[in-house]
Length: 120
Image (cartoon, rainbow, N blue to C red):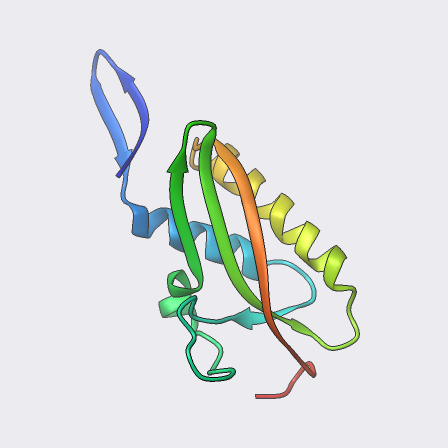
């Protein structure tokens, strides 16, 4: 659980799974991303995660400076990977900072594959 706010009325906490889901949804909103894959992928490239299990493609942990978020993605063929990754970093950081009130120290984008857009 991550503590967002404490005041005289009480505490606001958010479960790790909620933060992972929010980060995954923010990442999926970026141009050039085909999808997300499970972080513990063992044998080759598995299927892209559906929206109901999007948090499996995200890992969140705490540090002294804030949250460290790792996202595991597949990008579209022909896009600039560096730009897509940078957009994911910015979008996830902005979303978690402004919408969830969480301090984000780092967002690490792990590109696990490239697919032709529209390919399944």
